[in-house]
Length: 326
Image (cartoon, rainbow, N blue to C red):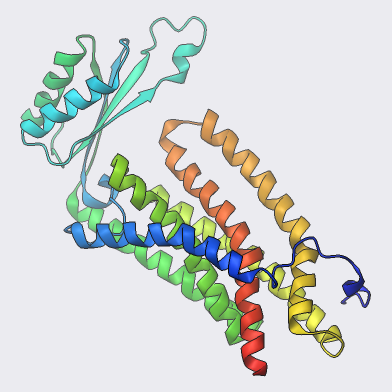
């Protein structure tokens, strides 16, 4: 039940009063993301909003171990030689082997060079031998330790299933909120989820343009998780607004109720997000390299999701209530 003395408490943040500022912040972070997404959709042959990894396009990942130090120029040399030999869009990355820092690990390779390129077929084929020769020319002690290949048809099927899962998640959330609250709340929740998704996808689009980052199937998992976290925070705010509005609407304006409701849930939202982010930051800095992009997407999504639930969704709700009374 709503607290009758709710309005006597001083608000920590006046969300409604400074709503142009919150929308300006959203515009500042979203416009570059939208531009990057649009650029990739127009310039890429598959019209994807991000650069897709071999999970979706099909390809081969080769990993080579070496005890030598690997410099940026070494990585660029390997990438150039692969391109000259006809390998399509080769991606070469350095993976630091953290196990090498442990004691009694003299036989453990210091670094791992990961090469992603177009589908090479059988591991015994001549193309893989060509790649190995190029790597051996740069690092004489290199050794092929892992080969993973995904066929183009499987990659397309995985992309289709990922997009279906994403669309179903959006649809399910909108249906649930429409049933649980009202259609206008569902529209605002959908716009909030879109806000968060565009930011996460746009960030990886920007990194893809400038640093050749590619996303894999874990990226879709991260986006789905971010959507769930964001809508959970938004529902908490909406539920508090609805409860306070039920008992206090005759005494106070909708803007006052929304302001007080946001401040009521502010501590809970921040505490939940901060504890989650601490865990994710630990995973990012001390976890494996294979999950680092996934964890980064989660960090970005939860941070922007907390912001949007407090400042973006509540501002849209305030405008909606004002428009309904006009």
